[in-house]
Length: 486
Image (cartoon, rainbow, N blue to C red):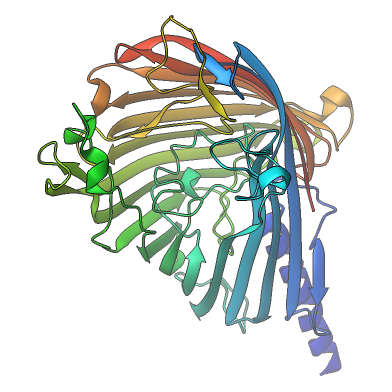
């Protein structure tokens, strides 16, 4: 009897280590195992795991025409930033339930990311009365709990069930649209995401998350997730439309005052290795540790999420529009060349069809720091704005593709340090700009010092400059990023 109990304990410990390692260390070091984990009983069935990761960046940007930074005209800018810091904990005190929470900061630079209302010691506000980048505020990225209805693996036999079902509640990341809409931020293939993979980003969601109830699991080779959520409130008052020749008369803007629920889902057919679905985060590249080929489809829908205005008066009634988005994608991570060389091809391609209402458009960027128009500038300007902004999200369509090639171990004659060049391409068309096409591309590489646990990445990326409703030319940015994940 003692021998059987001992075997069960050992088996569960191995399963626990593999589960946690797969969930969070995908593409990581094989020696990492279960990481920063505190086991709360002798069997390892009750535990708390802590995760910490940081992403530091240096960037040289060619700025949009006519830009001023801190009120000073500039054609280019060099900046340093903390792109993200995360502290997460994950606890399973029973096979039947778990809880996960994450806090962190985003986008702290010399002139962005500081806490609001700090005056000379924090963020002085839009009037720049003080400094804008100091003392960033931690906030909750997600907080949810989950209950097991039918497990992936039978509790008694440990054999895989044909179908499984889990139900969770809270501020969660079990969302739909595409694989990249739930992408993990610590195992990107190409430093970052195109942003439009999160089409509601920080409007009616919180960094890709919404509050609600989700279902997830597997059915044979298909992994699925579905949720019903309450979108965060975003209201554009009617008075904001009442200005001469207001474009909002014909352009939809965010206004979900009606408070409708949203639904979202994603399903993927897994042809080779089965990906772990313990947590929602999908992997950008497995760095030669897994053979994956998935084809997926997803959607997002909420009624009356945007509005236009009947006429140009402050009291004019509003016309509501639904937000309807769908996507289809394919992901491949295919090692080849045997264990000795361990080449690997990584590829991902996705098509989005976005409908936010007539002519809806959002311009945006990552860390566009205290920019504005330069005084006395008389040349062309981008319709997107100043700094490094470009059109990124809107009613229309987007196609995004990225590829990477993990070079063989024999190149550097080491099993630890690995090299991986990559490239990306984006093609978008927005209803706002008619038949005009907008493109950007990037090229760079990853230097893995210990998988995703320690890596250095670099790339050059372009963005479109919009003049007369079309892409007149492009500007670019050079980025170097360092990451450590524990």
